[in-house]
Amino acid sequence: MESSLVKDNPLLLPLNKEKTIYDGFITVQERDFRLRILLPPDRQVKQARLHCCWQLKHLLHGYEHIVKQRQQQSPDLVTFILELKTVLEVGLKSRHECRSIPPPQYYAQLISEMETLGWGKLLFIDTEFRTLRLKAEDSSRRQHILNIKLKSKHPVEAPECSADLPVPLAITWTPQSTLEQLHSQFLLLLESLTEFWDVLDEIDSKTWILEPEKPSRSDTMRRIAIGNNTSIKVEVDPRHPKMLPECCLLGAEHVVTPLRNKLNANMHLCGCERSPPAGRASTLFSESVLTAASLLR
Image (spheres, rainbow, N blue to C red):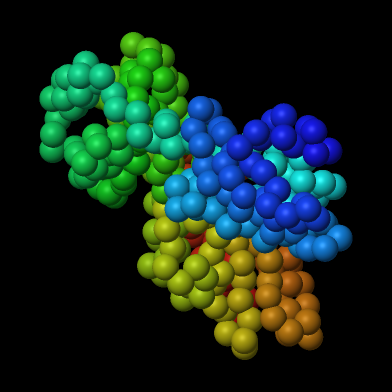
């Protein structure tokens, strides 16, 4: 083990004959980091204490739990040093990617795309011109935000996108794509969810919502109070909002059981059609949910 340790880490040397104290440097990607290792008398790596230089501490920030895990799993010091170097390589790579400065054409491309899209749609951009927030409005005048994180090789590399949606944000991107095209895809997705949000907005305005306390546009569940310390939980399918939702009665069993029987017996009164005309879909659905809740009172 000693020969392997010295061969792989020639600048990390034992300071006593028991070889329980090592001090020196470990080299990762041609960079040297000061490290001192204190082993217990039995030389068990699990009980070792590490003292690092400030550069090494800074680099390992956020990876402490991984280092601790590798320390507990390593059978000897040679294995642990190898594992530590692997973690450091990941940290250095991540740090390099975060600090890589895009070429001048990146900024020219971004400004050109924003001029085409319209600066009025830009809500926020960070000082590195990497993170953007674009606003969008659906046909019901609801406001939405599209979060975009651009890569340094934009537009060759696809950006990371997120939004407050009840479905995955699937974006098609090619090296020729632009922010305007991205925004247009987002608007199309919003329109496909308009009926879903229309339904939930009506339910929110006409019932006592217990959960979620502050619904977001990504929430598909509502828990509605119906009295007698009971409530009904409904889960709406964003892709099929006109269908009767999955319902679950919550409360004491002796109270819930007769309510459940009553709901099942009167379900035909909800009037939810399998394929109603498009213009009536959301109205019929919300009426069905509201009727179902009222039948339990």
